[in-house]
Amino acid sequence: MSAAPSAAPPDNDVLWARGIVKSHNGTPALRDVSIGIREGEVLAITGPRGSGKSTLLGCLSALLPVDRGEVWFNSSPVHTLSRAGREKLRRDRFGFVGPEPRLVPELTARENVALPLLLAGAGHKAAYSAADDWLERLDVTVCAKRRPSELVQTERQRIAVARALAPLPRVVFADDPTAPLHREAQDQVLRILTSAARSHQLTLVLATHDPELARYADRTVALVDGRTPVPAAPVRRGTPVPAAY
Image (cartoon, rainbow, N blue to C red; front, top):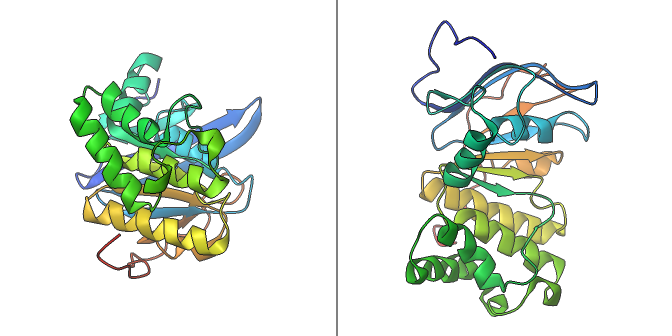
């Protein structure tokens, strides 16, 4: 295990990593990557396919153990956690959206969105009220009683975004979340996702190979061949969005 760093992570960094090294079956995926992500920040991690974006999200979100290096969440070490500890952290504090929705096929859209809240111990009424709210925000209320097999791809992806946001996690990890959508739908979902993160003071870490989508972020970090050769761009606000989403 990695030794504790000589200096504690910055207080305003909800996620902080130093010297991450990760390989897949002997092939290097991340090579000495260090990054800090501030509380409430919308950060885009960009780079071509195969550059290590998904692996970096996996390490930051405790899905993947690092081979070497340190990962901290709220100034507590993640890299020293057991597998059970990492699972609990993901369940209690993080939300996830991937390129595939991964909805439970036997459940309706409403039940899928309510599920993480119910698993976290929320009451039935509160869980389904939150599910209804987020289905409305994602403009898929009409899908509430339908199962995934009855929905088109764009509807399933919107429901996956609603499911990630409904528990109001501290950090949402979005790995190419709009890949299945056409451009107009991509923009709409990204506007909703980033607006929701900002209005609820959530931290959003977005991985994308599309520079057009990175414009919604406050800051961009580029990955090339598992490294960050380009300094992070200055903090900037993303494309303005309407207050109502």
